[in-house]
Amino acid sequence: MMKVKQDDLKTLNGFAAGAATAYGMLVERSAAGTVKGCIGAGLDYLGVACDREVINEDNPGFYETYDVMEVKPNGICMCWLMGGTTSTTNAYLKLGGAAYGAGTEAVGYLIPEATPAVRTVNTIARNVGDATTGDVGHADFDQVLVGNAAAGDLTLTLDATKITALALVPGDYIVIDSDAAQEVNRVVSTTTTTITLQNPCAAAYTTAANGTVYKLVQVKVLLL
Image (cartoon, rainbow, N blue to C red):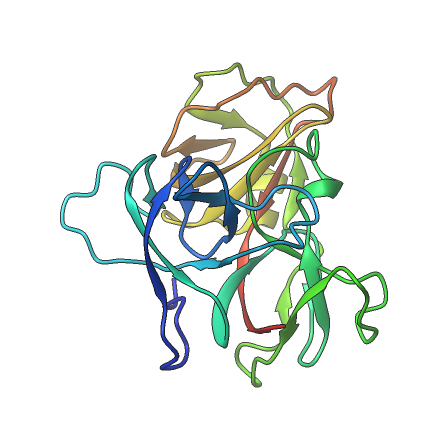
């Protein structure tokens, strides 16, 4: 994972995490003095949750509830692009949470605008990556589950072709999604047919409800 902060502009401190929040997610104000991943279109976003160096983190790669969060409110930073989508340099991006799950979960990843070259009222960022970081994403980074996962499970079941298409390595961030719920999680390990998760599933993800795994990729953006 590349550092969230990509310039020397100041960050905001003193906010407590209102819920578990992955590094690199867009965040918004929650209860007084707290912030969490953006919900829906998130046009009132505060900034991006910065990564940090903590020895022996309880939940590596995440702020836990009530952890003090550092937030980058403007400038250039690394955010997360939803799996199954792609973005190129200079393309516009918006928050994607409203398009997945119930649309009411605190997430904070980005998706491309419907017409990537056109800015809209929902646009919050622009891809400013170079030849290495500009053209990102992959159409195959979304794969449907072949087995059900219950709330509390630490394993997702796919098949060998789907696991290969996702190209996951330990530490990758993913979104688990269905018609009724979505969440951000992290990969501990994979086999030819399973993904072991860092955190137990917060909800049930079934094949009947179109349970799907999306691999998140970093995208270098200018916040607008």
